[in-house]
Amino acid sequence: MTEPLGADLAVAGVQVVPLGRIPDERGTIYHMLRRDDPHFIEFGEIYFTSIYRNVIKGWHRHADMTLNYACVWGRVKLVLYDDREESPTRGSLVERFLGPDDYSLVVVPPLVWNGLKGMDDVSLVANCATRPHDPARTERHDPFTTTIPYDWGVRHR
Image 1 (cartoon, rainbow, N blue to C red):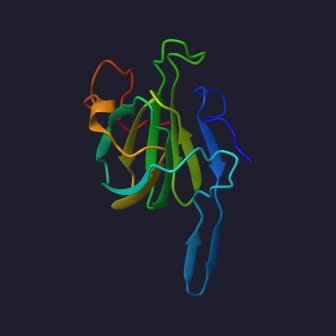
Image 2 (cartoon, rainbow, N blue to C red; image 1 turned 180 degrees about the vertical axis):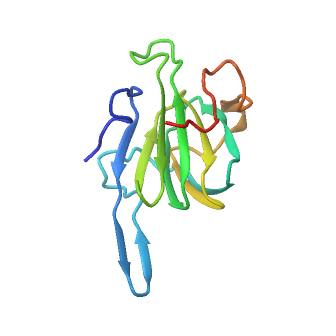
């Protein structure tokens, strides 16, 4: 079962897939992605990135790589921004908190800007990408660029 990202605002092509965990007295198995999952495209590479509290990794987007993010330890804020020319959700900006209270896979299509902010002392995010990383096919912006209309500060709601 998948759902669009966010309750009232979505980015075209983004999927959120709730993931399973199997805990017992020995530890926990964290499911992420299987080749027979309906949202699986292909395997390019898997990597893990650690993120310290309040550190921002972003902005970046990939020309032809789909990302499959899951936060397997800690808690992160994932922010997506859609500025694709032909996208029906062009201009949409959404955030989602991933971690123990929302253990999900977020499928991010090519050309969607994305960034992560650490919310715990150390968080670990896995990405099972559809292609091996190619720096020549990746675009980056500083986290505080004005090109993307997002403020990484805390929102006191």
